[in-house]
Image: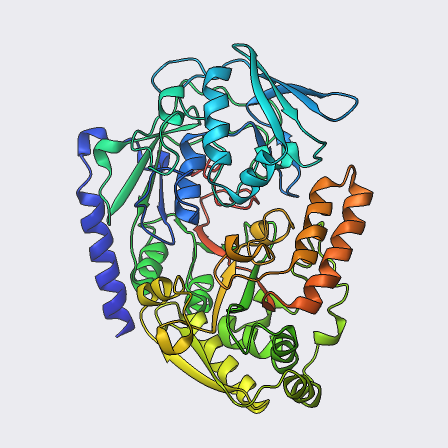
Length: 527
């Protein structure tokens, strides 16, 4: 059976590759063939926050700043910048050599509408907008950002690689309705999107931009010199893991972005294959409650959930081999600059009796709690089964309901009670780059109706989160982050289930991918 799967995978890959126009093919060693985790459907990184669209956006667009491997912002499109003594004025100068793929120079008249469009959509961008008094053009290469009050996260925000990305588009594209996706794909980045060879559901093609002028610094995460060492990058959409594994082992593809965890032992033992990590931070798994309705609107019930759930059980069920995961009770990711566990110490191990006491104090009387999940994303389904069993041990009446992922996604938008099509809990995960900062962590936004699904609401947590953003320096920011984390541990906007690494796989003749929040393909060499 395994040999049949492999043969089928090879045949499918060869069929996919044979559809490419032969006359257009560069030498084989100059084409990087990649299997991404998903198909590309939305081309606008300011209209979709999903990872595949962010990967696409960073291929063809650039941002003013870029996060390095430690998630520190470094100038990218910016050559130099200055901050006024009172912290209310930031002056930015664009670097030489910036041109769009249609030949037009990049100017500040493109930058200003691009930033306005991003601030209208993104969580971090929206937070920055609360501080902005004006964005003013000085000349073609200089603009000034004026603030109503100081904000220490300006460069960090302008280099964001999570959520909706603050890419710089042409003025004509950026000035459009921010709620409508841009369909033209003309950036100024190191790759050009090859629309003529785009086949949704099958293949996405990017060509090296011969006019791109990289920065002179060595590459570091998403920052530094973006030197393209191949002529072409092809994304081949192969949803079946066995097919992708077979194609990697035979050399029909060069990189598999997210290999299935259960196939890693097989592929890492294959000749000519390497399994490695590229992300500078692990992903975070979570059990997210709906806080609009009883019983999970009571923080004592959410604390009880935390005391009933052992992270090791969830991580082992979801991701198997312990080398890929670890326990962590930090909302902002252990190992990150904000990775404190302050206030969460008591949730390091289960305590069934303490959980039962909290449920009693909250007046819980066995009301049904609907946990929705799917087997289409294997780790979610396995971890949901662990959750149902763990909560039942504490006396919580769990109704575990499995559907397809599309139905789960749609149901998550329903704010009604569970007897009217709503829900009470679900399991998901997010990247470490997203969760490591109070400014970008979607789950700790407790601004009530404006928050992410689950809609947690706590004015004190929001006051403390604002204090992090307002902090004038790193010392003050660290203190504010610890105070915020203590409040979050008490309020439990979600139960942190641990953190895990998602490795990638490559052929041995392909140089290692840069450590970054998102997989990128500049500086990658194929020998």
